[in-house]
Length: 107
Image (cartoon, rainbow, N blue to C red):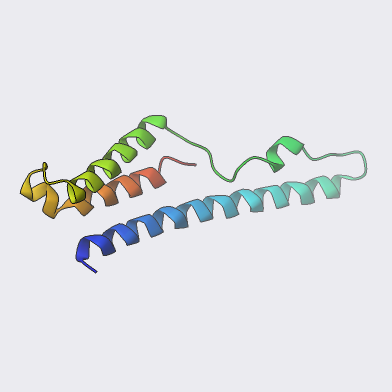
C-alpha cells in the first residue's frame, strides 16, 4: 500500500474514534442522569427525548460541507487525469484534511 493510503486510513480512523468517544460520552451522561432520577424517588421521571437521540450532533454545516468538498476533491485528484500532477501526487492531503475536519463538525 502506498503512503497516501495509510494517511487516509489513519485520518478516517481518527474520525471514527472521535464519533465513538462522543457516543460513549452521551451514554455516560444518560446513565448518570438515570441514576440521579433513581435517587430522587418514585415521583421523578427521566426525560424520554434525550434517551433516544444519537450520541452526536452536527455543530456546523459549513464545516461539514467544506470537509465533504475536500474529501471529494482528494478522491477526484486520485482518480482523474484532468488534475495537475502535483494534485495527483498529493491527493491524500485533501482527503485526510477533509476527514479530520469532518470529525470536528460533530459534537
